[in-house]
Image (cartoon, rainbow, N blue to C red; front, top):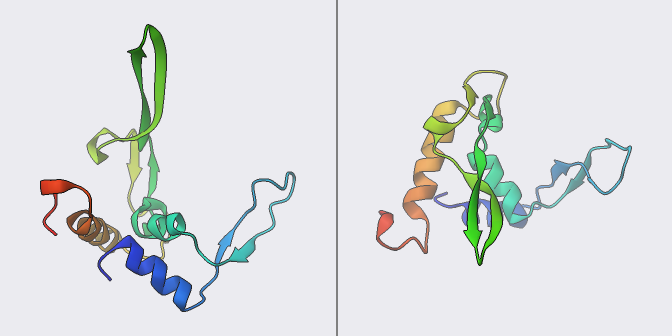
Length: 120
């Protein structure tokens, strides 16, 4: 499959349920199963943890002054070279590191809405 959306739609049409922990239920760490949402499929394809890697510092914040007030933008993705920690082969993954990198290249190349920045 060539995009996050295709993987998401395939998981939904095949009625594959994925594990999750409901953060709204305090004190319980019970694993529940539900049909995936778009973000879950995207994370499966792009998050290094699924390829057996430990990564820290993938996102950061940026402070700007807007209308005389400080505004902090959080969750900005950093380039891999700027991550604080990346330990490949840290644990057993469900896909290889090479597969993760291939997935990320395919997703980037096929992303819509990025103008002339993508190959298509």
